[in-house]
Image (cartoon, rainbow, N blue to C red; front, side, top):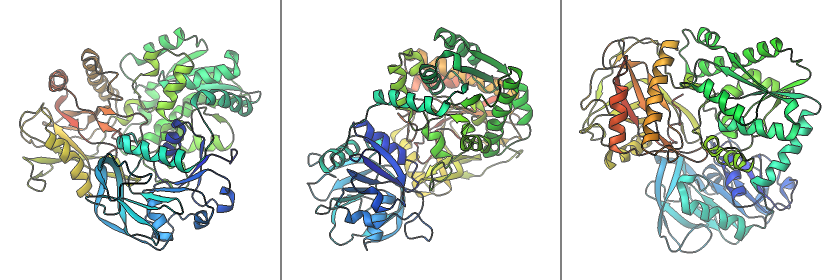
Length: 598
């Protein structure tokens, strides 16, 4: 470690490993991430060690195992989720599969009223869980500190050796007060650490950019979103305008008027070196008869690279003198399995095989690759970018390509599910979606609920949206049908991505954005994916899913609660679109569902 008094996070493959580092830095403390197997000898002199979560089971052969010599260093240690279980496992406690899997909010209560894991003024508080295993027996010397309804040993502590373990995730925004309290207590009370700030990062990354680029210029892929724009601004600040050239590729999968609006916005910011390439026909041709979500992402990513090369050749940009620039942020990397033990959730277009090869060859520059969305927004503010751009809703690199679901099936009818969850009625959709449960990727069914007033989302339905995926391992997403009061037979058609389908989704997406602007909700909702599903209530028609979420960093998210009148207005307008005859509201948090469906 470059700074001897920082916090080291040992990464056991958890989706939140870098989020822990981000949270520690937001406490004003320097932090960095190392592999789980880092020898204890290399960790001497650090201020503290945090053990991340992970998708494996500690007792399975081949699961990530750290060096238990860290417990002899006299350095404070905090284990989170898998890290909590690993502490118990290697110190002769016991870990076993949990009776109930916990994904989402849970309530924990204090067993004792002192120590860094508890707030004595709050005997109970809500936390964020994402696990299948649990600690069944405490190691010698540990006290039982916290419990939840589904997990008896939710927190444990060896106060003498300063070793702590918690089953929940204090680093995620959804754990709120107790999460910040625990991390702050650990970092500031138990450890003596060096400072860190986003403002200082600007100076640090500028030097890194100059060093990495050398004498080369940068051919920057831009989209108009906050990530690529902040990356563009950082590159120009470090290298100068003459060494950075922007490329905006029209994939045919962008939002309505996106290309012209982006071009205009970037011009106002003074980014004059910008080329716009209409490659929509190429993208649609390459996606013809492609149905698998991972295959779609790979094709979109590879087509980006093909178009970039064609444009570079056309503009006579010598490959030896130029690097490829991207606005990649860390969730893109971690969800693609970018760290040693991380499970692949989905391949991001900026992490396809060709890009990975270029990265190894030192031909890609990504100034934001270790940051999260909230930190990128902070950087944008520091760089004096306009607030409307800094706070613009995130939009996936593959665009509408990951919001247009495809299916080879035709005329598939799915049976009604009644009684299991004591609901009025529910129905499995004839398509699956990607989720993240226990730090692992899932590709499972989505369940649609039908009840009463279609525009009213009761507290009971919100509760079921959490309970059902936690108790049924075949489901990772729960929706409310807001176009029909009673279940109907789903007519599933064979659809892949076409311009016609993209245009249809563009119109639905435009309606949603108009309505949230009118309702004054744009800056309250963090992101609002609108998804096109390849089935409807009648043959040849399709369905729309509304997916408003609240988040700060994309690693976790709550499904946002929209006012009933807004839901009603959106639904009525969307149902007037030719080709749409059903609308759903996605009620699921992340985890167990990802923000995007694919």
